[in-house]
Amino acid sequence: MNQKARLLAEIEVTQAQFHQLLQSIPDEAFGLLSSNPAWTVGELLYHMSIAPRFMVADVKLILQRPFLLKLLPKLFPERLFHWLNARLTRHGARQLNRQFLADEYDKAHERILQTLHSLDEADLQKHVHYPDWDPLLAGDVSLDYLFGYIKRHFDSHAAEIQSSLTLTLSEEGTS
Image (cartoon, rainbow, N blue to C red; front, side, top):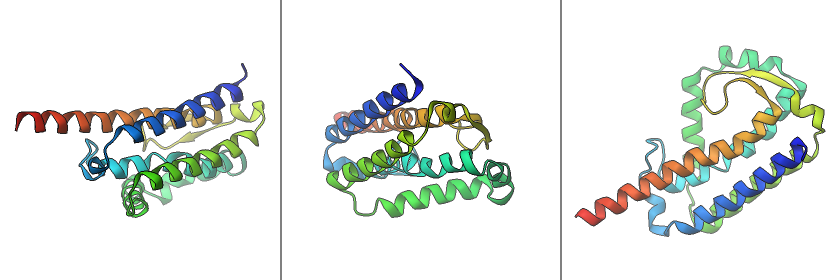
Protein backbone atom coordinates (compact mmCIF):
# COMPACT_ATOMS: atom_id res chain seq x y z
CA MET A 1 0.00 0.00 0.00
CA ASN A 2 1.44 3.38 -0.95
CA GLN A 3 1.44 6.41 1.35
CA LYS A 4 -1.57 8.08 -0.26
CA ALA A 5 -3.66 4.91 0.02
CA ARG A 6 -2.61 4.48 3.67
CA LEU A 7 -3.48 8.10 4.47
CA LEU A 8 -6.77 7.89 2.61
CA ALA A 9 -7.77 4.80 4.59
CA GLU A 10 -6.75 6.47 7.87
CA ILE A 11 -8.70 9.63 7.06
CA GLU A 12 -11.80 7.62 6.07
CA VAL A 13 -11.63 5.59 9.32
CA THR A 14 -11.25 8.80 11.30
CA GLN A 15 -14.36 10.26 9.65
CA ALA A 16 -16.33 7.12 10.60
CA GLN A 17 -15.00 7.35 14.17
CA PHE A 18 -16.07 10.99 14.36
CA HIS A 19 -19.61 10.06 13.35
CA GLN A 20 -19.66 7.18 15.85
CA LEU A 21 -18.49 9.50 18.60
CA LEU A 22 -21.03 12.16 17.61
CA GLN A 23 -23.87 9.64 17.66
CA SER A 24 -22.82 8.34 21.08
CA ILE A 25 -23.15 11.75 22.75
CA PRO A 26 -26.58 12.85 23.98
CA ASP A 27 -27.70 16.28 22.77
CA GLU A 28 -27.77 17.62 26.32
CA ALA A 29 -24.05 16.83 26.69
CA PHE A 30 -23.03 19.32 23.96
CA GLY A 31 -23.13 22.16 26.50
CA LEU A 32 -21.10 20.37 29.17
CA LEU A 33 -17.66 21.67 29.98
CA SER A 34 -15.00 19.44 28.47
CA SER A 35 -11.74 18.44 30.09
CA ASN A 36 -10.17 20.89 27.64
CA PRO A 37 -10.63 24.22 29.47
CA ALA A 38 -11.12 26.16 26.23
CA TRP A 39 -14.35 24.51 25.12
CA THR A 40 -17.57 22.66 25.85
CA VAL A 41 -18.08 19.15 24.49
CA GLY A 42 -20.01 20.54 21.50
CA GLU A 43 -17.37 23.17 20.77
CA LEU A 44 -14.70 20.49 20.93
CA LEU A 45 -16.66 18.39 18.42
CA TYR A 46 -16.80 21.41 16.11
CA HIS A 47 -13.09 22.07 16.67
CA MET A 48 -12.35 18.59 15.33
CA SER A 49 -13.52 19.80 11.90
CA ILE A 50 -11.12 22.73 11.93
CA ALA A 51 -7.88 20.72 11.59
CA PRO A 52 -8.69 19.26 8.17
CA ARG A 53 -10.12 22.58 7.05
CA PHE A 54 -6.94 24.53 7.85
CA MET A 55 -4.68 21.77 6.60
CA VAL A 56 -5.55 22.72 3.02
CA ALA A 57 -3.73 26.03 3.60
CA ASP A 58 -0.86 24.20 5.32
CA VAL A 59 -0.36 21.99 2.26
CA LYS A 60 -0.14 25.08 0.05
CA LEU A 61 2.38 26.65 2.43
CA ILE A 62 4.59 23.56 2.40
CA LEU A 63 4.46 23.21 -1.38
CA GLN A 64 4.52 26.85 -2.48
CA ARG A 65 5.69 29.12 0.35
CA PRO A 66 7.62 27.17 2.98
CA PHE A 67 9.53 30.31 3.98
CA LEU A 68 6.31 31.67 5.52
CA LEU A 69 6.44 28.99 8.21
CA LYS A 70 9.83 30.37 9.27
CA LEU A 71 8.37 33.88 9.50
CA LEU A 72 5.13 32.85 11.17
CA PRO A 73 6.42 32.62 14.76
CA LYS A 74 8.03 36.04 14.42
CA LEU A 75 4.89 37.69 13.04
CA PHE A 76 2.25 35.70 14.86
CA PRO A 77 3.01 34.89 18.52
CA GLU A 78 1.94 31.54 19.97
CA ARG A 79 -0.48 33.11 22.45
CA LEU A 80 -2.27 34.85 19.56
CA PHE A 81 -2.52 31.50 17.74
CA HIS A 82 -4.14 29.87 20.79
CA TRP A 83 -6.41 32.86 21.41
CA LEU A 84 -7.64 32.83 17.79
CA ASN A 85 -8.05 29.05 17.82
CA ALA A 86 -10.30 29.28 20.88
CA ARG A 87 -12.31 32.23 19.53
CA LEU A 88 -12.77 30.82 16.02
CA THR A 89 -13.98 27.55 17.48
CA ARG A 90 -16.49 29.24 19.78
CA HIS A 91 -17.70 31.48 16.97
CA GLY A 92 -18.06 28.63 14.48
CA ALA A 93 -19.84 26.43 17.01
CA ARG A 94 -22.49 28.93 18.09
CA GLN A 95 -25.34 27.01 16.36
CA LEU A 96 -24.60 23.57 17.73
CA ASN A 97 -26.71 20.61 16.83
CA ARG A 98 -25.93 17.08 15.71
CA GLN A 99 -26.60 17.70 12.00
CA PHE A 100 -24.53 20.89 11.95
CA LEU A 101 -21.57 19.08 13.55
CA ALA A 102 -21.84 16.15 11.13
CA ASP A 103 -22.09 18.48 8.12
CA GLU A 104 -19.14 20.63 9.21
CA TYR A 105 -16.91 17.59 9.69
CA ASP A 106 -17.98 16.11 6.37
CA LYS A 107 -17.30 19.38 4.51
CA ALA A 108 -13.81 19.53 6.00
CA HIS A 109 -13.32 15.85 5.21
CA GLU A 110 -14.17 16.41 1.54
CA ARG A 111 -11.78 19.35 1.28
CA ILE A 112 -8.89 17.37 2.69
CA LEU A 113 -9.62 14.40 0.42
CA GLN A 114 -9.56 16.70 -2.61
CA THR A 115 -6.24 18.07 -1.45
CA LEU A 116 -4.77 14.61 -0.83
CA HIS A 117 -5.92 13.40 -4.26
CA SER A 118 -4.21 16.41 -5.89
CA LEU A 119 -0.79 15.32 -4.60
CA ASP A 120 1.56 12.69 -5.88
CA GLU A 121 3.61 10.32 -3.72
CA ALA A 122 6.75 12.46 -3.98
CA ASP A 123 4.88 15.48 -2.58
CA LEU A 124 4.24 13.59 0.65
CA GLN A 125 7.98 13.65 1.41
CA LYS A 126 8.26 17.45 1.26
CA HIS A 127 8.68 18.96 4.68
CA VAL A 128 9.17 22.15 6.66
CA HIS A 129 9.79 23.11 10.26
CA TYR A 130 6.62 23.93 12.23
CA PRO A 131 6.56 26.10 15.33
CA ASP A 132 6.12 24.21 18.60
CA TRP A 133 2.59 25.50 19.20
CA ASP A 134 0.88 22.13 19.01
CA PRO A 135 2.69 19.05 20.36
CA LEU A 136 0.84 16.92 17.78
CA LEU A 137 2.21 19.02 14.90
CA ALA A 138 5.62 20.49 15.64
CA GLY A 139 9.19 20.29 14.45
CA ASP A 140 10.10 18.78 11.09
CA VAL A 141 6.73 18.07 9.44
CA SER A 142 6.34 16.26 6.11
CA LEU A 143 3.10 16.30 4.17
CA ASP A 144 2.73 12.63 5.08
CA TYR A 145 2.93 13.54 8.78
CA LEU A 146 0.64 16.53 8.24
CA PHE A 147 -2.13 14.32 6.83
CA GLY A 148 -1.64 11.96 9.78
CA TYR A 149 -2.50 14.92 12.02
CA ILE A 150 -6.17 14.39 11.24
CA LYS A 151 -6.16 11.10 13.16
CA ARG A 152 -3.85 12.35 15.94
CA HIS A 153 -5.98 15.48 16.42
CA PHE A 154 -9.21 13.45 16.46
CA ASP A 155 -7.80 10.84 18.88
CA SER A 156 -6.56 13.53 21.25
CA HIS A 157 -9.87 15.40 21.42
CA ALA A 158 -12.02 12.26 21.39
CA ALA A 159 -10.15 11.17 24.52
CA GLU A 160 -10.89 14.56 26.13
CA ILE A 161 -14.58 14.21 25.28
CA GLN A 162 -14.76 10.65 26.62
CA SER A 163 -12.98 11.76 29.79
CA SER A 164 -15.42 14.65 30.23
CA LEU A 165 -18.47 12.43 29.74
CA THR A 166 -17.12 9.73 32.05
CA LEU A 167 -16.41 12.29 34.76
CA THR A 168 -19.87 13.86 34.39
CA LEU A 169 -21.60 10.48 34.55
CA SER A 170 -19.61 9.44 37.62
CA GLU A 171 -20.43 12.76 39.34
CA GLU A 172 -24.12 12.28 38.54
CA GLY A 173 -23.98 8.76 39.93
CA THR A 174 -22.57 9.97 43.27
CA SER A 175 -25.01 12.83 43.75
